[in-house]
Image (cartoon, rainbow, N blue to C red):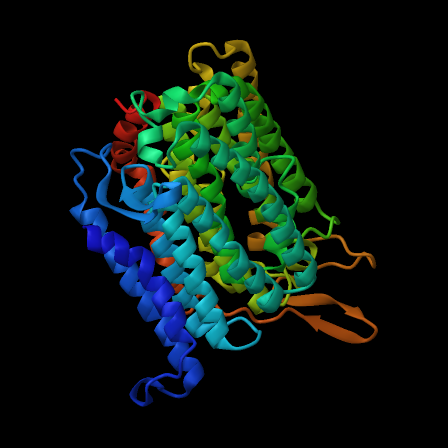
Length: 538
Protein backbone atom coordinates (compact mmCIF):
# COMPACT_ATOMS: atom_id res chain seq x y z
CA UNK A 1 0.00 0.00 0.00
CA UNK A 2 2.84 2.40 0.76
CA UNK A 3 4.47 1.65 -2.58
CA UNK A 4 1.16 2.02 -4.39
CA UNK A 5 0.51 5.48 -2.97
CA UNK A 6 4.08 6.57 -3.68
CA UNK A 7 3.73 5.24 -7.23
CA UNK A 8 0.46 7.13 -7.75
CA UNK A 9 2.22 10.39 -6.87
CA UNK A 10 5.60 9.80 -8.56
CA UNK A 11 4.69 7.92 -11.77
CA UNK A 12 3.10 10.94 -13.52
CA UNK A 13 6.29 12.96 -12.91
CA UNK A 14 8.46 10.20 -14.33
CA UNK A 15 6.04 9.89 -17.23
CA UNK A 16 6.27 13.62 -17.91
CA UNK A 17 10.06 13.39 -18.18
CA UNK A 18 9.82 10.32 -20.41
CA UNK A 19 7.31 12.09 -22.68
CA UNK A 20 9.95 14.65 -23.61
CA UNK A 21 12.47 11.97 -24.62
CA UNK A 22 12.58 10.32 -28.07
CA UNK A 23 10.28 7.32 -28.32
CA UNK A 24 11.95 3.88 -28.70
CA UNK A 25 11.91 2.77 -32.37
CA UNK A 26 9.51 -0.10 -31.77
CA UNK A 27 6.91 2.12 -30.06
CA UNK A 28 6.62 4.96 -32.53
CA UNK A 29 3.58 3.57 -34.34
CA UNK A 30 2.60 5.83 -37.22
CA UNK A 31 4.85 8.61 -35.93
CA UNK A 32 6.30 10.34 -32.87
CA UNK A 33 3.08 12.28 -32.22
CA UNK A 34 1.04 9.10 -31.94
CA UNK A 35 3.75 7.54 -29.79
CA UNK A 36 3.73 10.32 -27.19
CA UNK A 37 -0.08 10.39 -27.07
CA UNK A 38 -0.07 6.63 -26.55
CA UNK A 39 2.50 7.18 -23.82
CA UNK A 40 0.14 9.60 -22.06
CA UNK A 41 -2.72 7.09 -22.17
CA UNK A 42 -0.45 4.33 -20.85
CA UNK A 43 0.97 6.33 -17.94
CA UNK A 44 -2.38 7.73 -16.82
CA UNK A 45 -3.89 4.25 -17.21
CA UNK A 46 -1.22 2.73 -14.95
CA UNK A 47 -1.78 5.50 -12.39
CA UNK A 48 -5.54 4.86 -12.50
CA UNK A 49 -4.94 1.13 -12.00
CA UNK A 50 -2.73 1.88 -8.99
CA UNK A 51 -5.38 4.21 -7.55
CA UNK A 52 -8.07 1.56 -7.98
CA UNK A 53 -5.77 -1.00 -6.32
CA UNK A 54 -5.38 1.44 -3.43
CA UNK A 55 -9.14 1.69 -3.13
CA UNK A 56 -9.52 -2.10 -3.19
CA UNK A 57 -6.76 -2.63 -0.61
CA UNK A 58 -8.02 0.19 1.61
CA UNK A 59 -9.27 -0.95 5.02
CA UNK A 60 -12.92 0.04 4.65
CA UNK A 61 -13.63 -0.94 8.25
CA UNK A 62 -11.38 1.87 9.50
CA UNK A 63 -11.71 4.73 6.96
CA UNK A 64 -10.85 7.35 9.59
CA UNK A 65 -7.35 5.95 10.01
CA UNK A 66 -4.53 7.20 7.80
CA UNK A 67 -3.42 4.31 5.60
CA UNK A 68 -0.61 3.59 3.14
CA UNK A 69 1.49 6.10 5.09
CA UNK A 70 5.05 7.10 4.36
CA UNK A 71 6.87 9.37 6.81
CA UNK A 72 10.46 10.30 5.94
CA UNK A 73 12.48 13.28 7.16
CA UNK A 74 13.18 15.70 4.30
CA UNK A 75 14.42 19.06 5.66
CA UNK A 76 15.31 18.25 9.25
CA UNK A 77 16.25 21.80 10.27
CA UNK A 78 12.72 23.03 9.46
CA UNK A 79 10.90 19.88 10.57
CA UNK A 80 9.56 19.24 7.05
CA UNK A 81 8.84 15.60 6.26
CA UNK A 82 7.76 13.61 3.22
CA UNK A 83 4.55 12.45 4.85
CA UNK A 84 1.98 10.69 2.66
CA UNK A 85 -1.26 8.96 3.58
CA UNK A 86 -4.92 8.56 2.64
CA UNK A 87 -8.17 8.22 4.57
CA UNK A 88 -11.85 8.19 3.68
CA UNK A 89 -11.76 11.89 2.85
CA UNK A 90 -8.86 11.87 0.40
CA UNK A 91 -9.28 8.45 -1.24
CA UNK A 92 -12.36 9.33 -3.39
CA UNK A 93 -10.69 12.52 -4.61
CA UNK A 94 -7.52 10.61 -5.44
CA UNK A 95 -9.39 8.01 -7.51
CA UNK A 96 -11.53 10.64 -9.27
CA UNK A 97 -8.42 12.64 -10.22
CA UNK A 98 -6.74 9.56 -11.69
CA UNK A 99 -9.93 8.66 -13.59
CA UNK A 100 -10.52 12.12 -15.08
CA UNK A 101 -6.89 12.48 -16.14
CA UNK A 102 -6.95 9.08 -17.85
CA UNK A 103 -10.18 9.94 -19.69
CA UNK A 104 -8.66 13.25 -20.80
CA UNK A 105 -5.55 11.46 -22.09
CA UNK A 106 -7.72 8.91 -23.90
CA UNK A 107 -9.87 11.64 -25.48
CA UNK A 108 -6.77 13.59 -26.53
CA UNK A 109 -5.29 10.50 -28.22
CA UNK A 110 -8.15 10.62 -30.72
CA UNK A 111 -8.79 14.35 -30.67
CA UNK A 112 -5.70 16.40 -29.79
CA UNK A 113 -6.43 20.14 -29.43
CA UNK A 114 -4.75 22.43 -31.93
CA UNK A 115 -1.49 23.81 -30.61
CA UNK A 116 2.24 23.24 -30.42
CA UNK A 117 4.11 19.99 -29.76
CA UNK A 118 2.10 16.97 -28.53
CA UNK A 119 5.11 16.10 -26.38
CA UNK A 120 4.70 19.29 -24.39
CA UNK A 121 0.94 18.72 -24.13
CA UNK A 122 1.35 15.21 -22.68
CA UNK A 123 4.16 16.29 -20.34
CA UNK A 124 2.08 19.19 -18.98
CA UNK A 125 -0.94 16.92 -18.53
CA UNK A 126 1.15 14.48 -16.48
CA UNK A 127 2.72 17.22 -14.34
CA UNK A 128 -0.77 18.55 -13.67
CA UNK A 129 -1.88 15.07 -12.60
CA UNK A 130 1.13 14.68 -10.30
CA UNK A 131 0.40 17.98 -8.55
CA UNK A 132 -3.28 17.27 -7.99
CA UNK A 133 -2.69 13.72 -6.75
CA UNK A 134 0.04 14.92 -4.40
CA UNK A 135 -2.29 17.60 -2.99
CA UNK A 136 -4.73 14.89 -1.85
CA UNK A 137 -1.99 12.55 -0.58
CA UNK A 138 0.47 14.71 1.38
CA UNK A 139 0.16 15.28 5.14
CA UNK A 140 2.71 18.07 5.59
CA UNK A 141 1.70 21.72 5.28
CA UNK A 142 4.77 22.70 3.27
CA UNK A 143 4.38 19.77 0.89
CA UNK A 144 0.69 20.64 0.55
CA UNK A 145 1.62 24.15 -0.51
CA UNK A 146 4.21 22.90 -3.01
CA UNK A 147 1.74 20.46 -4.55
CA UNK A 148 -0.99 23.11 -4.51
CA UNK A 149 1.25 25.44 -6.52
CA UNK A 150 2.63 22.74 -8.79
CA UNK A 151 -0.55 22.65 -10.86
CA UNK A 152 -0.53 26.35 -11.77
CA UNK A 153 2.22 26.33 -14.39
CA UNK A 154 0.94 23.36 -16.46
CA UNK A 155 -2.62 24.72 -16.41
CA UNK A 156 -1.33 28.15 -17.44
CA UNK A 157 0.41 26.70 -20.49
CA UNK A 158 -2.51 24.43 -21.38
CA UNK A 159 -4.75 27.50 -21.56
CA UNK A 160 -2.20 29.86 -23.14
CA UNK A 161 -0.88 27.49 -25.82
CA UNK A 162 -3.79 25.15 -26.58
CA UNK A 163 -6.73 27.40 -25.71
CA UNK A 164 -9.17 29.33 -27.87
CA UNK A 165 -9.97 33.01 -28.23
CA UNK A 166 -8.47 35.36 -25.60
CA UNK A 167 -6.42 32.50 -24.23
CA UNK A 168 -3.46 34.70 -23.24
CA UNK A 169 -5.65 37.07 -21.23
CA UNK A 170 -7.47 34.16 -19.56
CA UNK A 171 -4.22 32.35 -18.72
CA UNK A 172 -2.65 35.43 -17.15
CA UNK A 173 -5.79 36.18 -15.16
CA UNK A 174 -5.88 32.60 -13.91
CA UNK A 175 -2.29 32.54 -12.73
CA UNK A 176 -2.29 36.04 -11.21
CA UNK A 177 -5.42 35.39 -9.15
CA UNK A 178 -4.25 32.01 -7.91
CA UNK A 179 -0.67 33.12 -7.23
CA UNK A 180 -1.77 36.14 -5.22
CA UNK A 181 -4.11 33.94 -3.19
CA UNK A 182 -1.34 31.40 -2.68
CA UNK A 183 1.07 34.00 -1.31
CA UNK A 184 -1.44 34.89 1.41
CA UNK A 185 -2.11 31.20 2.07
CA UNK A 186 1.62 30.52 2.49
CA UNK A 187 1.80 33.15 5.23
CA UNK A 188 -1.02 31.40 7.07
CA UNK A 189 0.59 27.97 6.73
CA UNK A 190 3.92 29.29 8.01
CA UNK A 191 2.18 30.98 10.93
CA UNK A 192 0.59 27.67 11.94
CA UNK A 193 3.84 25.73 11.56
CA UNK A 194 6.02 28.22 13.42
CA UNK A 195 3.58 28.77 16.29
CA UNK A 196 2.87 25.08 16.80
CA UNK A 197 6.37 23.79 16.14
CA UNK A 198 5.32 21.29 13.47
CA UNK A 199 3.99 21.18 9.91
CA UNK A 200 2.53 17.71 10.33
CA UNK A 201 -1.16 17.85 9.45
CA UNK A 202 -2.09 14.72 11.41
CA UNK A 203 -0.45 15.95 14.62
CA UNK A 204 -2.00 19.39 14.20
CA UNK A 205 -5.47 17.90 13.83
CA UNK A 206 -5.50 16.12 17.21
CA UNK A 207 -6.58 17.58 20.53
CA UNK A 208 -3.47 16.36 22.32
CA UNK A 209 -1.18 17.56 19.53
CA UNK A 210 0.64 20.84 19.11
CA UNK A 211 -2.50 22.67 17.98
CA UNK A 212 -3.19 23.37 21.67
CA UNK A 213 -0.44 25.98 21.37
CA UNK A 214 -2.40 27.98 18.80
CA UNK A 215 -4.11 30.89 20.52
CA UNK A 216 -7.47 32.22 19.37
CA UNK A 217 -5.79 35.18 17.65
CA UNK A 218 -3.35 32.93 15.80
CA UNK A 219 -6.22 30.73 14.67
CA UNK A 220 -8.14 33.75 13.39
CA UNK A 221 -5.17 35.01 11.39
CA UNK A 222 -4.41 31.52 10.10
CA UNK A 223 -7.97 30.85 8.89
CA UNK A 224 -8.18 34.29 7.29
CA UNK A 225 -4.90 33.89 5.39
CA UNK A 226 -5.28 30.22 4.46
CA UNK A 227 -8.96 30.71 3.67
CA UNK A 228 -8.30 33.47 1.14
CA UNK A 229 -5.90 31.27 -0.82
CA UNK A 230 -8.27 28.32 -0.73
CA UNK A 231 -11.31 30.46 -1.59
CA UNK A 232 -9.66 31.74 -4.78
CA UNK A 233 -9.12 28.16 -5.97
CA UNK A 234 -12.58 26.95 -4.80
CA UNK A 235 -13.77 29.45 -6.31
CA UNK A 236 -15.81 31.48 -3.84
CA UNK A 237 -17.78 34.56 -4.81
CA UNK A 238 -16.47 37.33 -5.22
CA UNK A 239 -13.01 35.80 -5.88
CA UNK A 240 -14.34 33.75 -8.79
CA UNK A 241 -13.94 36.10 -11.75
CA UNK A 242 -10.91 34.26 -13.18
CA UNK A 243 -12.94 31.07 -13.63
CA UNK A 244 -15.35 31.93 -16.50
CA UNK A 245 -12.54 33.38 -18.62
CA UNK A 246 -10.27 30.39 -17.95
CA UNK A 247 -12.98 27.86 -18.80
CA UNK A 248 -14.09 29.69 -21.93
CA UNK A 249 -10.54 29.88 -23.31
CA UNK A 250 -9.23 26.49 -22.14
CA UNK A 251 -9.14 23.43 -24.41
CA UNK A 252 -11.71 20.74 -23.64
CA UNK A 253 -9.44 18.61 -21.44
CA UNK A 254 -8.23 21.75 -19.64
CA UNK A 255 -11.81 22.67 -18.75
CA UNK A 256 -12.55 19.12 -17.60
CA UNK A 257 -9.55 19.02 -15.26
CA UNK A 258 -10.03 22.58 -14.07
CA UNK A 259 -13.64 21.95 -13.04
CA UNK A 260 -13.29 18.30 -12.06
CA UNK A 261 -10.06 18.43 -10.08
CA UNK A 262 -8.46 21.84 -9.49
CA UNK A 263 -11.50 23.43 -7.87
CA UNK A 264 -11.64 20.54 -5.40
CA UNK A 265 -8.16 21.39 -4.11
CA UNK A 266 -9.51 24.55 -2.50
CA UNK A 267 -12.47 22.94 -0.75
CA UNK A 268 -10.33 19.95 0.28
CA UNK A 269 -7.93 22.38 1.96
CA UNK A 270 -10.78 23.81 4.04
CA UNK A 271 -11.72 20.31 5.25
CA UNK A 272 -8.20 18.98 5.77
CA UNK A 273 -6.51 22.09 7.20
CA UNK A 274 -8.86 24.86 8.35
CA UNK A 275 -11.53 22.78 10.10
CA UNK A 276 -9.33 20.50 12.25
CA UNK A 277 -6.24 22.66 12.78
CA UNK A 278 -7.90 26.00 13.62
CA UNK A 279 -11.46 25.14 14.74
CA UNK A 280 -11.90 28.30 16.84
CA UNK A 281 -10.89 30.54 13.96
CA UNK A 282 -13.08 28.57 11.59
CA UNK A 283 -16.02 28.91 13.98
CA UNK A 284 -15.63 32.69 13.94
CA UNK A 285 -15.45 32.95 10.14
CA UNK A 286 -18.01 30.21 9.36
CA UNK A 287 -21.03 32.59 9.10
CA UNK A 288 -19.12 34.81 6.65
CA UNK A 289 -18.05 31.80 4.59
CA UNK A 290 -21.65 30.58 4.51
CA UNK A 291 -22.89 34.03 3.48
CA UNK A 292 -20.44 34.25 0.58
CA UNK A 293 -21.36 30.69 -0.40
CA UNK A 294 -25.10 31.43 -0.42
CA UNK A 295 -24.61 34.61 -2.46
CA UNK A 296 -22.41 32.63 -4.86
CA UNK A 297 -25.14 30.02 -5.34
CA UNK A 298 -27.72 32.63 -6.33
CA UNK A 299 -25.26 34.78 -8.27
CA UNK A 300 -23.98 31.86 -10.33
CA UNK A 301 -27.52 30.78 -11.18
CA UNK A 302 -28.62 34.30 -12.16
CA UNK A 303 -25.53 34.71 -14.34
CA UNK A 304 -26.40 31.43 -16.08
CA UNK A 305 -29.99 32.55 -16.60
CA UNK A 306 -28.75 35.78 -18.17
CA UNK A 307 -26.48 33.84 -20.52
CA UNK A 308 -29.20 31.33 -21.42
CA UNK A 309 -31.83 33.86 -22.48
CA UNK A 310 -32.53 34.39 -26.13
CA UNK A 311 -30.51 37.14 -27.80
CA UNK A 312 -27.87 37.31 -25.04
CA UNK A 313 -25.14 35.74 -27.22
CA UNK A 314 -24.29 33.56 -24.23
CA UNK A 315 -21.40 31.12 -24.48
CA UNK A 316 -22.29 27.59 -23.35
CA UNK A 317 -18.81 26.95 -21.88
CA UNK A 318 -19.05 30.20 -19.95
CA UNK A 319 -22.50 29.22 -18.69
CA UNK A 320 -21.23 25.91 -17.31
CA UNK A 321 -18.31 27.77 -15.70
CA UNK A 322 -20.74 30.06 -13.88
CA UNK A 323 -22.77 27.01 -12.87
CA UNK A 324 -19.61 25.75 -11.13
CA UNK A 325 -19.61 28.90 -8.98
CA UNK A 326 -23.08 27.95 -7.78
CA UNK A 327 -22.37 24.26 -7.29
CA UNK A 328 -19.15 24.92 -5.38
CA UNK A 329 -21.17 27.33 -3.25
CA UNK A 330 -23.05 24.30 -1.90
CA UNK A 331 -19.71 22.69 -1.02
CA UNK A 332 -18.58 25.79 0.87
CA UNK A 333 -21.96 26.08 2.61
CA UNK A 334 -21.69 22.49 3.83
CA UNK A 335 -18.18 23.10 5.17
CA UNK A 336 -19.31 26.31 6.90
CA UNK A 337 -21.96 24.44 8.92
CA UNK A 338 -19.13 22.62 10.76
CA UNK A 339 -21.43 19.62 11.22
CA UNK A 340 -20.87 16.01 10.09
CA UNK A 341 -23.97 16.24 7.89
CA UNK A 342 -22.82 19.42 6.15
CA UNK A 343 -19.19 18.39 5.70
CA UNK A 344 -20.20 14.95 4.37
CA UNK A 345 -22.52 16.73 1.96
CA UNK A 346 -19.67 18.99 0.87
CA UNK A 347 -17.38 16.02 0.19
CA UNK A 348 -20.13 14.20 -1.71
CA UNK A 349 -20.90 17.34 -3.76
CA UNK A 350 -17.19 17.61 -4.57
CA UNK A 351 -17.22 14.19 -6.23
CA UNK A 352 -20.60 14.70 -7.89
CA UNK A 353 -19.53 18.03 -9.37
CA UNK A 354 -16.32 16.52 -10.70
CA UNK A 355 -18.17 13.72 -12.48
CA UNK A 356 -21.09 15.75 -13.84
CA UNK A 357 -19.32 18.95 -14.82
CA UNK A 358 -16.44 16.98 -16.30
CA UNK A 359 -19.00 15.20 -18.51
CA UNK A 360 -20.66 18.50 -19.47
CA UNK A 361 -17.37 20.11 -20.50
CA UNK A 362 -16.51 17.04 -22.59
CA UNK A 363 -19.88 17.36 -24.33
CA UNK A 364 -19.68 21.09 -24.91
CA UNK A 365 -16.14 20.78 -26.26
CA UNK A 366 -17.30 18.09 -28.69
CA UNK A 367 -20.27 20.24 -29.69
CA UNK A 368 -17.91 23.11 -30.50
CA UNK A 369 -15.74 20.77 -32.58
CA UNK A 370 -18.80 19.66 -34.54
CA UNK A 371 -20.56 22.98 -34.91
CA UNK A 372 -17.70 25.48 -34.69
CA UNK A 373 -19.20 27.56 -31.87
CA UNK A 374 -20.60 27.43 -28.36
CA UNK A 375 -22.74 30.54 -28.83
CA UNK A 376 -26.20 29.60 -27.57
CA UNK A 377 -28.05 31.79 -30.04
CA UNK A 378 -26.27 30.12 -32.94
CA UNK A 379 -26.73 26.65 -31.47
CA UNK A 380 -30.46 27.33 -31.07
CA UNK A 381 -30.91 29.32 -34.29
CA UNK A 382 -32.34 28.32 -37.63
CA UNK A 383 -29.21 26.33 -38.54
CA UNK A 384 -28.62 25.31 -34.96
CA UNK A 385 -27.79 22.02 -33.34
CA UNK A 386 -31.26 20.52 -32.59
CA UNK A 387 -29.44 17.51 -31.20
CA UNK A 388 -32.48 15.31 -30.57
CA UNK A 389 -33.20 15.22 -34.29
CA UNK A 390 -29.66 15.22 -35.70
CA UNK A 391 -27.55 13.43 -33.09
CA UNK A 392 -29.99 11.76 -30.67
CA UNK A 393 -27.41 9.93 -28.55
CA UNK A 394 -25.36 13.12 -28.21
CA UNK A 395 -28.49 15.06 -27.29
CA UNK A 396 -29.62 12.42 -24.82
CA UNK A 397 -26.27 12.44 -23.03
CA UNK A 398 -26.27 16.25 -22.88
CA UNK A 399 -29.76 16.21 -21.39
CA UNK A 400 -28.64 13.56 -18.89
CA UNK A 401 -25.70 15.75 -17.81
CA UNK A 402 -28.01 18.74 -17.41
CA UNK A 403 -30.60 16.97 -15.26
CA UNK A 404 -27.80 15.45 -13.17
CA UNK A 405 -26.35 18.93 -12.68
CA UNK A 406 -29.67 20.38 -11.53
CA UNK A 407 -29.81 17.79 -8.74
CA UNK A 408 -32.45 15.31 -9.87
CA UNK A 409 -33.06 12.70 -7.11
CA UNK A 410 -31.47 9.39 -7.99
CA UNK A 411 -28.39 11.00 -9.53
CA UNK A 412 -25.17 12.10 -7.84
CA UNK A 413 -25.90 15.83 -7.86
CA UNK A 414 -28.85 15.45 -5.47
CA UNK A 415 -27.22 14.10 -2.32
CA UNK A 416 -24.45 16.63 -1.79
CA UNK A 417 -26.71 19.65 -2.17
CA UNK A 418 -29.41 18.14 0.03
CA UNK A 419 -26.96 17.25 2.81
CA UNK A 420 -25.35 20.71 2.65
CA UNK A 421 -28.78 22.31 3.17
CA UNK A 422 -29.63 19.84 5.95
CA UNK A 423 -26.39 20.87 7.65
CA UNK A 424 -27.40 24.54 7.35
CA UNK A 425 -30.78 23.71 8.92
CA UNK A 426 -29.01 22.64 12.12
CA UNK A 427 -25.50 24.19 12.17
CA UNK A 428 -22.84 23.52 14.78
CA UNK A 429 -23.33 24.75 18.34
CA UNK A 430 -22.60 28.45 18.71
CA UNK A 431 -23.44 29.34 15.10
CA UNK A 432 -26.50 31.51 14.48
CA UNK A 433 -29.34 29.23 13.39
CA UNK A 434 -31.51 32.06 11.95
CA UNK A 435 -28.60 33.18 9.79
CA UNK A 436 -27.97 29.66 8.50
CA UNK A 437 -31.69 29.15 7.87
CA UNK A 438 -31.51 32.24 5.66
CA UNK A 439 -28.50 30.79 3.84
CA UNK A 440 -30.40 27.52 3.42
CA UNK A 441 -33.35 29.38 1.90
CA UNK A 442 -31.02 31.16 -0.55
CA UNK A 443 -29.48 27.81 -1.47
CA UNK A 444 -32.97 26.41 -2.07
CA UNK A 445 -33.72 29.35 -4.36
CA UNK A 446 -30.49 28.55 -6.18
CA UNK A 447 -31.67 25.00 -6.89
CA UNK A 448 -34.83 26.37 -8.54
CA UNK A 449 -32.83 28.83 -10.64
CA UNK A 450 -30.42 26.03 -11.60
CA UNK A 451 -33.28 23.91 -12.87
CA UNK A 452 -34.59 26.89 -14.85
CA UNK A 453 -31.42 27.71 -16.77
CA UNK A 454 -30.44 24.09 -17.43
CA UNK A 455 -33.87 23.24 -18.81
CA UNK A 456 -33.69 26.33 -21.03
CA UNK A 457 -30.32 25.18 -22.34
CA UNK A 458 -31.62 21.66 -23.04
CA UNK A 459 -34.68 23.01 -24.83
CA UNK A 460 -32.70 25.41 -27.01
CA UNK A 461 -29.75 23.17 -27.87
CA UNK A 462 -31.35 19.74 -27.96
CA UNK A 463 -34.83 20.52 -29.24
CA UNK A 464 -34.08 23.50 -31.48
CA UNK A 465 -37.39 25.05 -32.39
CA UNK A 466 -38.19 28.42 -33.85
CA UNK A 467 -35.91 31.25 -32.84
CA UNK A 468 -37.01 34.70 -34.08
CA UNK A 469 -34.66 36.15 -36.66
CA UNK A 470 -34.05 39.73 -37.68
CA UNK A 471 -35.73 39.19 -41.07
CA UNK A 472 -38.77 37.53 -39.46
CA UNK A 473 -38.30 34.31 -41.46
CA UNK A 474 -39.44 30.88 -40.32
CA UNK A 475 -37.16 28.03 -39.40
CA UNK A 476 -37.30 24.32 -40.17
CA UNK A 477 -35.08 21.75 -38.52
CA UNK A 478 -32.50 20.08 -40.72
CA UNK A 479 -32.48 22.77 -43.45
CA UNK A 480 -33.28 26.44 -43.24
CA UNK A 481 -36.55 27.53 -44.77
CA UNK A 482 -35.54 31.07 -45.68
CA UNK A 483 -33.49 32.70 -48.37
CA UNK A 484 -30.83 35.25 -47.48
CA UNK A 485 -29.19 37.16 -50.35
CA UNK A 486 -30.46 34.48 -52.75
CA UNK A 487 -28.72 31.53 -51.01
CA UNK A 488 -30.37 28.73 -49.05
CA UNK A 489 -28.94 28.25 -45.57
CA UNK A 490 -28.44 24.59 -44.77
CA UNK A 491 -27.94 23.28 -41.26
CA UNK A 492 -24.66 21.41 -40.85
CA UNK A 493 -24.64 17.66 -40.45
CA UNK A 494 -23.67 16.79 -36.87
CA UNK A 495 -22.17 13.32 -36.37
CA UNK A 496 -23.42 11.39 -33.38
CA UNK A 497 -21.16 9.92 -30.69
CA UNK A 498 -17.99 8.22 -31.86
CA UNK A 499 -16.61 5.08 -30.21
CA UNK A 500 -13.79 6.92 -28.45
CA UNK A 501 -16.32 9.41 -27.08
CA UNK A 502 -18.37 6.55 -25.67
CA UNK A 503 -15.21 5.19 -24.05
CA UNK A 504 -14.20 8.56 -22.55
CA UNK A 505 -17.63 9.67 -21.32
CA UNK A 506 -19.51 6.51 -20.34
CA UNK A 507 -17.59 6.02 -17.04
CA UNK A 508 -18.67 9.48 -15.87
CA UNK A 509 -22.32 8.83 -16.71
CA UNK A 510 -22.28 5.39 -15.07
CA UNK A 511 -20.62 6.68 -11.88
CA UNK A 512 -23.12 9.56 -11.73
CA UNK A 513 -25.95 7.02 -11.66
CA UNK A 514 -24.21 4.68 -9.21
CA UNK A 515 -23.38 7.49 -6.78
CA UNK A 516 -26.98 8.69 -6.97
CA UNK A 517 -28.49 5.25 -6.35
CA UNK A 518 -25.91 4.07 -3.81
CA UNK A 519 -24.68 7.13 -1.87
CA UNK A 520 -23.71 4.94 1.09
CA UNK A 521 -20.68 3.71 -0.85
CA UNK A 522 -19.14 7.19 -0.64
CA UNK A 523 -20.68 8.38 2.62
CA UNK A 524 -19.51 5.19 4.34
CA UNK A 525 -15.94 6.26 3.55
CA UNK A 526 -16.22 9.93 4.45
CA UNK A 527 -18.46 9.90 7.53
CA UNK A 528 -16.13 8.15 10.03
CA UNK A 529 -13.22 10.32 8.87
CA UNK A 530 -15.33 13.49 9.18
CA UNK A 531 -16.58 12.49 12.64
CA UNK A 532 -12.99 12.02 13.80
CA UNK A 533 -11.82 15.23 12.13
CA UNK A 534 -14.53 17.34 13.77
CA UNK A 535 -14.00 15.53 17.06
CA UNK A 536 -10.41 16.66 17.37
CA UNK A 537 -8.85 13.42 16.16
CA UNK A 538 -10.91 11.19 18.48
